[in-house]
Image 1 (tube, rainbow, N blue to C red):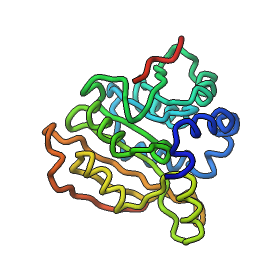
Image 2 (tube, rainbow, N blue to C red):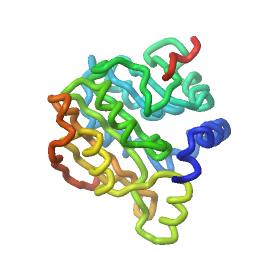
Image 3 (cartoon, rainbow, N blue to C red):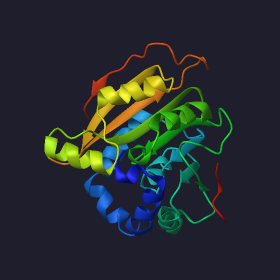
Amino acid sequence: MGILEDKANARLFYRYFSRVYDTINPYIWDDRMRNQALEWFDADRDDRVLDVGAGTGFATEGLLNHVDEVYALDQSRGQFEQAFTKFGKRGKVRFHMGDAERLPFKDDSFDKLWSSGSIEYWPNPVAALREFRRVVKPGGTVLVVGPDYPKLRVFQTLADAIMLFYDAEEAEEMFTEAGFEETRHFIQQRHRGAPRAITTVATVPEEAESSDTDAGSAVESGSAEPVDR
């Protein structure tokens, strides 16, 4: 387990990193990559959408071009402080402090769920993905963006020491174990030589107890409470 997969370490890290996050993030995950992922997400204007690990709101901004309201969840108050300056504390974004592995929402609460740049910090990603399946209605979409595993051994060693990196095969294993049956995995990259992102688009099964069914996949390029108001 990488050092930032410890939740306390991740919260401490983002207490300070949140101040420069919006400056650094575009070099890794930019507007073009986000907008491509939004096409795969394919949200309708009246969809009820949850953004897990919403952070400073970079993805939330994109989501609001497609839906009227976004529920944003994060464990970092520092990240949300930056988001408040963009959206205010009352408006189209409903902020919740919380944990991806224990979502503070009822079953089938959302039509779609988005999570970008968060899975790499989860100690138990399968538990979080099961939670995603629980709170999204059957037939709904779950989209998760994480860091693709480096190809060079020297970077693999560094990646393993920091946080979760994974490839398409490992993504498929995690989503299958969490009970998803239909998944697609896309590789995204800002430019050649830049870090690669792996974006998984999955459909919540129509049958609640269908986690043992074999999954089909494709690889392509291209306890908590609301935040104080």
